[in-house]
Structure formats: structure tokens, C-alpha cells
Length: 124
Image (cartoon, rainbow, N blue to C red):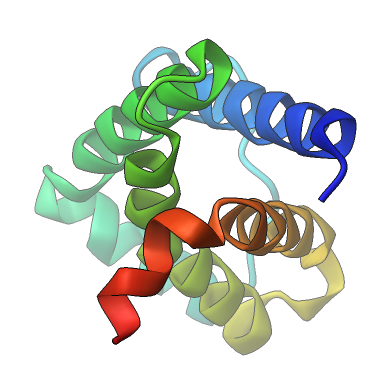
């Protein structure tokens, strides 16, 4: 794969994760309007008191790894369940706003493909 494309994808995903991770703690981005079902679901996650801080830490660690080009495969593996759950949330509750989730998932898949030589031994 073209290393320029890989580098751009890595930076885009890394910066996105840093911004969304910081937002989990600093709350500088407004919350989107949610349907009643989505609001109930997100309220339950928030009510647990630990899900969003853990997600914020995962986002920040993965984002730093991607931006600094250190332990990139580790960051990508950390983001697989995150990507799956973000897509599942939007497919279930908020299809109209799925674009951001799709971009994160596509970037993650693209980068896993680019780093496949680091992952293929896991599937032997």
C-alpha cells in the first residue's frame, strides 16, 4: 500500500482519537440530539460511571500511538472493538449520523490492511 496514504490515514485516525478521547474528559464538543432509545442507552452507559472514562483513555492511548507512529498495530487492535461498537450503535439507533463512525471504521480497516504483515500470524 502507498506509504503516503497509510501515513495520512494513520494521522487522521490518530488525531480523531485524540480529539474524541480528550472530549470524554473535557466535554468541549456539544452532544448531538439523540432519539429516546439512543438517549436511554447512552444514559445507561454514562450512569455506569466508568465506560466513558475508559473509552477516553483507550482513544487517547491509541491516538498517541498512531500520531507518534509507535506500537501502531497495538493501537489498531485496541480500536477494533471500538469501531465495531460505534458502527453497531449508529446502525441500531442513529443511521442518519453514521458517516463519522464509517470513516473511523474504514480508516481502521485500511490501516489493518496496511499493517497486515504484523497481524497475519494471529490467524494461522
